[in-house]
Length: 320
Image 1 (cartoon, rainbow, N blue to C red):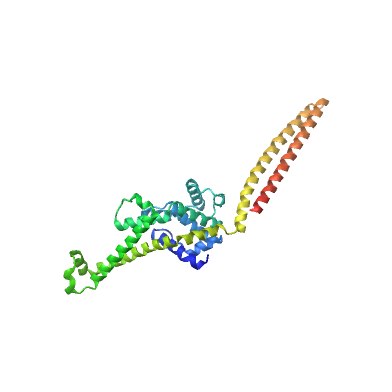
Image 2 (tube, rainbow, N blue to C red):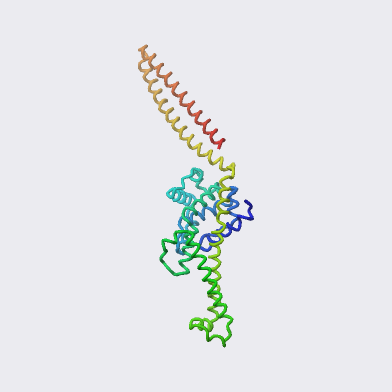
């Protein structure tokens, strides 16, 4: 899929984000993230952070935008991971990302796609838009059906165009022709600046509604492009990240090994003391020798197990 085909759809999504109070993000950021470029990491973390706190009130949205800049990177990453895990996003590649926001833009992009689909982000925005137009605080259950939402968007556009047409007609009406106007239209005619303000608001509303229609028509392009992100080969950085996860497991095994060595070493010291204090008994010498041989065998076994774990972890990391 060519960038010329997908870029307008991503631009549409970015514009919708901007209209609903999210921090500015561009299609370029998405393209960088697809190829796991580090420049996309912070913008994507910020967007995901704002999305998990998405609220219909603009003041709350601004509040969380400010919180992002006030919190440490580690706090933000942990909040995002916990929230997404509770929502069902449990992929190891994402959960193993470092807390310093230094790697993993490709994984963040995949996560973003999952999140906007999971929370039905565009549908939420359409409902908010329709609610603001109708000033209706009640959302019908039928609005949960996407086709109904789109039909309402289309109807809102038709209404918008009719109102715009009538306002423009009033604006260009001659004084002699105003006897056909309603009292409200006459009032508008007497205050032309109000007509200009209404037309500006109608233009904004029409632009927003048109974005939803464009997205609905072309969103499959976006999702196919997101699928192509999953097909991207794992970069060197991601491979190292996965290797780090295996190393963490290996380190745990190593700690177990060292703990076993310490325990056995303590036992050897006690046996040595026992041998010194009872060196006049020949039978004890044989018993101690047998125990030492057994301990030596156990240590060798543990060491070989550690080597085998190391080898299998390395092979697994390389194969992935």
